[in-house]
Image 1: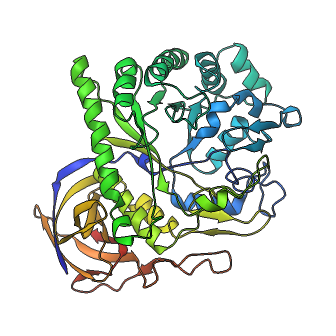
Image 2: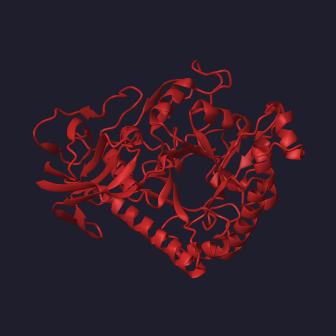
Image 3: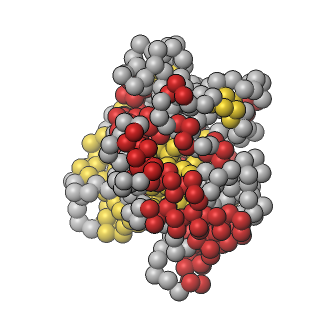
Length: 493
């Protein structure tokens, strides 16, 4: 099989916002307790954060981390995670039917983010709470005034503001599973008024309004239009959430997941532009795909977990090679839509549908999906360039004309390097790439890294942490993609 790829570095999509490589830590399962935070662990630092986990997180080079939820935030009182730990309340957490100790809150997490070389994307509770609590949280985090909540932060030992600049107006508020879910108009009104108050406290912040919880919601599109019509002047982004999986073990269809992601992105962008046209404004609302990942492996296991535990092992998907190839393809789609997707969060970061796993009190290792994310985060910064790929296609599930080869190209900021990310979706055939670069500049390949192998179901474990790892391929005259593989080919000018 062959694929012809044509690239012209002058035919650009957009400068890539580095926040497209964000992630997510929710108070859910073992993401916080036993994940990033474990004071009794042998690697714990002075604040109880696991440094073995921190070191793996730093390898991913994540610019933002969404916090504290997720479904969790719709029932969360942010004040519970501040001040004297001995006085913090232990509460029933309804979203995940667990017990929340509040040992970690914004006081601790803002320091963790600094140590992880990241920033916080903070969510406010628009389920059980509203505009008043949200504006108070902005004051607590960002204000230097001599006022109640800014003084409260100082009294808790933080003289300087946390300076959180990106905020989510609730989470998945159309979902019936959400604490105090809302109709489109109910949410649109509270989001609008909350946004106004938050920006009156700190005009420098950016706000993300909730889009539909996923693309199959019955009010999808109606929800987006209603929220945008009410909130347009006060928000900066609207969110997209979607997860992908292979519960039917149809690998050919699963490898085409990015086709659905691409369609979803373009639909929401079109709705944003429709409302922009209605309002006769020059302002463009861009997209925050702040929950995306593969999630299906743990569904049956989670039904067996007893309720009202502290940090139960929820959503602990174990990822295989097949998942890594799909995740690499989803990242390609985000890069190819970087003109509209400015923020994205791999959900989540540790233990909970995550690239990094831990044993409570024990070892830390990385899953298969860690590697395509790490390499794309490392080399996918700069300017996305359009790739024109001619290759054969196939049909699977309800999809037709699925290209066997999925590609994206990124030009470094100094234009000295060009990186091509490519997935070969064929289950049986290798693919020989024919590459033409237009515009006169000569680039030569200096590195080819791939995730490939015969066993698509192979996984990494604590006992075998390196069973599925990237390989460095020997460079030859022709670039060849193995069957069902993710690839990164680096070129120098």
